[in-house]
Image (cartoon, rainbow, N blue to C red; front, side, top):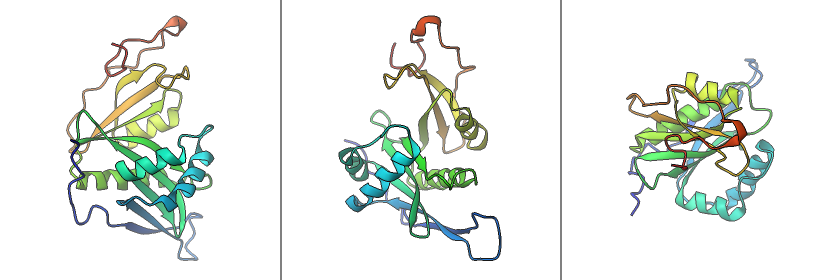
Length: 209
């Protein structure tokens, strides 16, 4: 049976700061709040659905999968005042309950390019660490070079595997891992080029060996 998130009185306390999107100092800016959704809240489903559709070219969720993630996973929200501008959806690993996978991360258009995504993810990693989580993984499309750079160079993630055609889309995905205690991660020495003809390479964690 999967272990619950360890109780931590401060783990789900909202993180709040003032943020000036326009980088001016002539107003109080926005209240940038990181909120952990620790109890299922179906009223969030429309906002999370809208955010997903604004972020990706095809929908990630149905109302049923969002409801399941709200109940059995863990969702973190980024709010600017009362507006939900970002969401990170986490799932506990079945094989290692001390590991969490970031299944989805979305940030509303118009709020990107200001460093908020990195600050959001940093705050979520701190909350996961407070819950006793030891490792975090995520996947990113191999051609999403900007995201890969952020995860590796700013956040400290390491590429540990290549998943070939993971979602039956013809696209390769990199799996990255971060140890929240700062210990080193055994990664791939390099990311091999896709083989001619699209054959799936046999790589650690790629699901084809």
